[in-house]
Image (cartoon, rainbow, N blue to C red; front, side, top):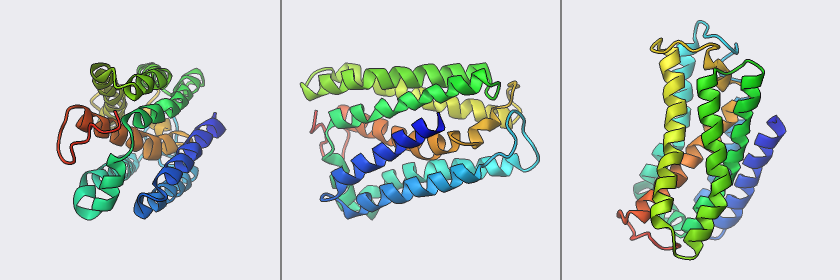
Length: 228
């Protein structure tokens, strides 16, 4: 399963690097660097013990959350810090952004973690089922958008995708803050391959969903309903 998650992430990096190679050197370099950093941290691990919280995990969680947030903050800052990169991202077709999410099939890792007793059922089933749903429906949504159809469907699909990610984050946060008693504790989220999922695939999914919604809803800047 680890090799599957790594393979999916590597395929994403290769595809995005090729797409942005002539459109934005900044993004063409950022994707491989982002991936390598996520792999290094995945191999190191964040939470040392699976199934329970131990001393120091709260601070690790804060740092983990900050690392997850950095790419999303960078995306929000692109119009100011890297207008060229912002324009290149806006040139990515909506159907491509939708099809990209097929990598969420890696969410089956949550089912394996549940089977091994490493993840609480509420987190594993919610994240696993919704991830797989987004993955298997991604090509259908991409096809509709490539034909200039399905905008309302795409909006609903993106909202479901974001809800999936937010539920997972909130469940882990509620557990470590003691607001929700989960057994086992979802500390395996800080071990391989879930660190790679959390630091690379998850922020990328958030960015893709937000970018699609921004353009589907006609939000500025850039008038980006292009590529629909």
